Length: 216
Image 1: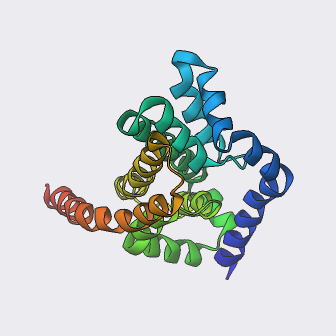
Image 2: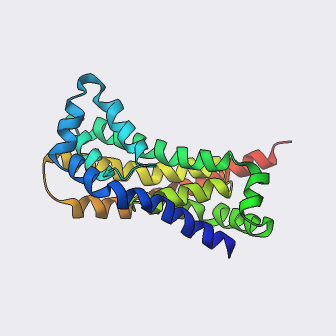
């Protein structure tokens, strides 16, 4: 039960910046605004784009608009890779900060029994949750934090993050590069591709895990 309240508490914590600055930042970085802002940094636009996506962990940045702008500035391939990298780093930062709390600190927040239960859940289905959550604002950050708190295996978390971030980054970069107003296509690709990728990657992770266990 306490784990549920922590989930709700984290959701409310991430919701506060949306209520305070969401409208302002959304207007500033939507559509051509994000493109103009990136272009103002010249050769360092890619770093500025990654910084915006990582800042989404603390501020309500319109991540999909930034990814589309990266596609416009750098093209669908490079722009997609930069956008996916920024999203990946944001999730990894959330995961790492919560994981660094350590088991002792985590037990103070969550009862030991619930912590062990959450670890079991994330080790079994955490990959699906992490991969699919990247598309949903607010939920993506909360899930990454919960994965870190539950100490989800690092290899599985990184693989799931990649499965969720890559389709989203490339899909919106393609839309931005084409200059087409078809967000439904990007949303569809971002929702359908992560579970397909995770289905392909999951057996490889299990095989590697079994090899590590079998080593003397």
